[in-house]
Image 1 (cartoon, helix red, strand yellow):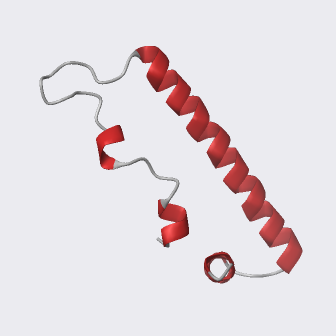
Image 2: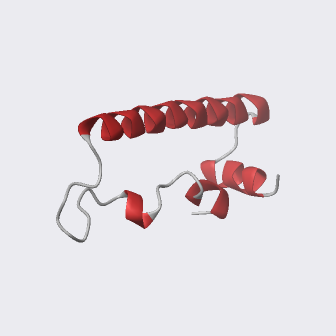
Image 3: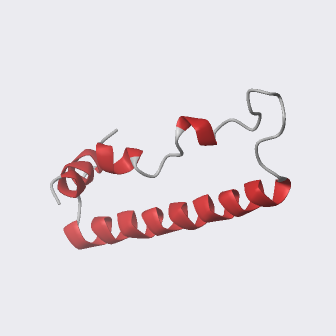
Length: 71
């Protein structure tokens, strides 16, 4: 994965639902909001990928990744 793609992933401390003292780290509302934000981001990335595919014609995913990483 390139650095650009890694920027959308949550930080390791955001992936744990339980804190060190075994108390829930996030409420259900917090998790629902985070899930919705991630769904929106995925939709944005899918739209961007569709744009690249339509703009550059018949290119492979690897070529698209190269184009994006060179931006």
